[in-house]
Image 1 (cartoon, rainbow, N blue to C red):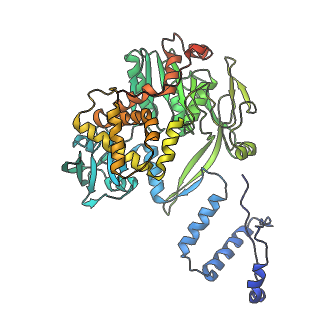
Image 2: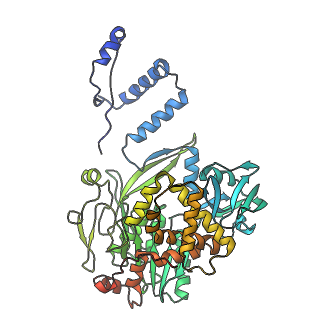
Image 3: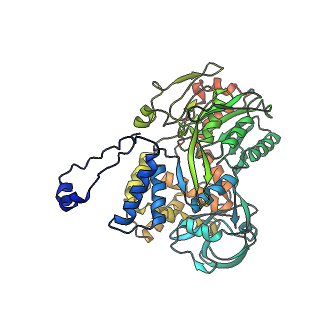
Length: 539
C-alpha cells in the first residue's frame, strides 16, 4: 500500500498579501516531505506545526484535541489496518473480549422494529435465572425507554458493576408485561457455545473466539464428545475473528504431539524469531479432525488451521480464510485508552505467510490464484499454499446467493430490514400458537404466506412472483427463527446444520473413519461430494 503524501507549503509574511491569487493557481497534487537532516529535527518540526495550528488556524481547535489528532495521524500513517489508538470505551471493550468476562445480566440482543429483542439469555446468568426468554422485548432499563436505541446502547445500559441492581421491563408475545429487578454479576462469554453429536460417531464443536478460557473450554468439550462415542470431530472456526495468540497456540497443542512446531513469530529487524512448539502429548491422538474455515476466520483461527494442516493432523474444509498473518500487542496509556500495534508477523510450521499484506503484489491485487501462490509440501506429500489466507483442502459452501434470493433482495431494497422484522414477528406469533411441536418440523406454505401477509400489513410492496420463487428459502429462514424462539438456540442449530453444505461435507469425510489420516484419502473420492441441498416447501 502506498504511503499518503503530505502537503508542505511554507508561506512567509510577505507572501500573504497575494496568497489568495497564488494558491488558486497551484496544482492540487500532494508533495512528499523530504527526509529531515537529523532525527531530532522531527520534534522541532512537530512543535512548530502544532504551535501554528494552535494559534493561527482559522478555526479554534482545543489543545487536547490537537494532540489526539496527532496521535491518530501517526498511527494512521503506519498504513497498518490492525494498528490503532483505542479510546477508553474501545479499550475496555477489547479487554472484555480478551478476558471473556463483563459485568452485566447476560443476554444476547438484537433490534427489531426499533425495539430491543432478546436473542438468547446466557445460560446461568441473572437474566436466565430471572426467567427472561428468547423473543422477549426489553421496553426499559433503569426506567429509561429503549425504543429507537441501537443494540450497543441497550447493551451498555444493561452492563455495570457486579453486585449492582437494575430494573428491567419486558414485553412477552406483545401481551404480557413483566417488571424484573436483576442483580448484575460477572458474566463469562463462552468461546465454545455449542457441543453436539452429529451423525453416528461424529462430534461437533463451535469455537467463536479465542479468549482467556478457550483452550480449557474446548478440552472439556472434546472430553464430553469422547464419552458420547465420538471418533472424529468437526472443529468449526467459521466466522471466528481470532483473539489471543497464546490461546490459538494452546488449542493447536490439543491436537499435536510434543515438540511439533505450531507457529513462528518474526519481529522487527535485529530481533530473533520466536518459535512456539507443542509441550505435551495430545490427549486424543486417534480422533480424526475436520477444521471448518471461511472468509471471516482470522488471526488465531488461521494459526490453528494452518498448524493442523501443515502437520496433516486435520483436513481443512470450507472457503479460504481471511488472511491476517500478523500479531498485535496492546499497550495501556497512562492518560486513558490504549495503543494496539503490530509487533510481529507469524508463519505456519512449514514457513507459510498467509497474510494478504505480506507483500505488495498481494496487497494490491487481493488473494492470488492457487497457480501463482507459494507452494509448500506437508509430511504426507500434500500441497498447501501461502499468500492470502488458509486455502482449504476441500472447498465447500456456496459463495453466492441463489438467484431467487438475489431477486428477492433486489425487490426488497431498503425494505430488507422490514422483511427481517416480519419474519421475526411471524415466528413469535407461531411460538405463541404452538405451531411447531418439534424442532425439525417442516414449514408449510401457509406459514410462509403469513410472512407475505405481514409484509403487506407493513406496506412493503414487491412482486408476488418474486416472493413465491424465493418461498423455499423464506421457509428455511422462518424455520430457523421459529425453532430458536420456540425451542432455543440449540434447536435452531440443528435446523441450520441439516442445510449446511460445509458441515455435510465434513461429516461425509469423517463418518466411520478408522484413523485420523483416512479423511485425506476420502477427499479424493468423488462419491463423498455432497450436492447442494435445495430447500423444498411442504403444503
